[in-house]
Length: 438
Image 1 (cartoon, rainbow, N blue to C red):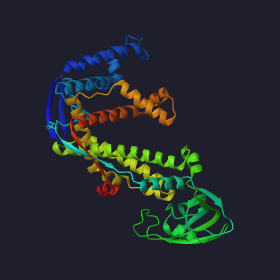
Image 2 (cartoon, rainbow, N blue to C red):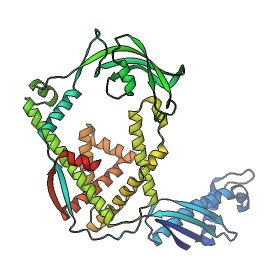
Image 3 (cartoon, helix red, strand yellow):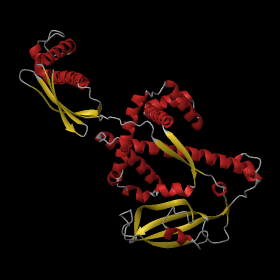
Image 4 (cartoon, helix red, strand yellow):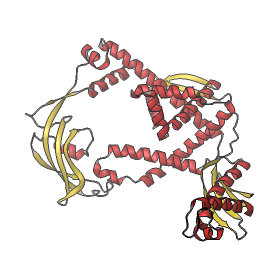
């Protein structure tokens, strides 16, 4: 076998592969021998059909079968001989069999970059922990109070801000019903921003069973092009009006909501949970800063295919979130192409970080054991209230187990690095963290 390797740059390699004629001829002969034993052709006994007759009917199929066997085997040998760390599937071109039965083809592949790690021992970082204030605890208690608010029917008054209403509505543009602009028994909290501001404000002052036309003028740059720059008339009927009632933050609330004896005990529990979450957030920030510093110290061009895959992943996740948040008439307006392109820079950075951490894992001897996997699967099973064995089987089927393995390995690498680095501990106000993220 003859192989010519060409470096096309940016982690792309071009292989020109030539297979001796005897290899192809041998595979074809084997294929015809197998075929002869199982095919039936009128006028010939099975197993006794002459080769020239088989070639008349099956030559293309036989040659294709030979190619399907030879090409993968020779391609794998070529990348092994050249020690190429290939990513994804090869692009095969120029597949041809010469008259002398010499097989030639080319394979274009993407490979992992060669990374020469700079020395990272002795790096210094700061873990920024957020102080949990009394105000934080009060705000969390108020959030719990809001989350467990109750709504009472108030049929004897009109709608006001913060009310919970049930409505029927239908939108019209120029007298024509708007596609996807209809709702029946639609729940809505006034002021929540679920609908556009003008629509929600238009409901204020309406009474139960009252019907009203609410005109909304949409800006020319509104994301739904069907109604951008147009006036939409919504015919609305109020079916129910409910008033929000907040439960009192007292011992009874603590027992019902927080499984605590007193409101003071609930406050202490809330503080403990907030501090735990902030420790996790501080760790996540630290690990992000470590990865960013390593990328800065070790600049290289990551494999394009991996970047494109990361962009796909991030765009699909963003699309799902947007689909969940948008109303039905807006969902068709999501531009996945522009959405995806917006993730190119962050995807490049993420992939570079992951490749660097993988390289470091080799140097540090970091591996993921079966015990690591089982421990994490068990933890997830407890959170989901699922059987461990069933969850693991399902994770194997849908590919999430492999992703879990990668996540565990990433955490082990970063924890190893944290133990090697000098980590300073400081406590800061939340405003400092918010300012840095803006």
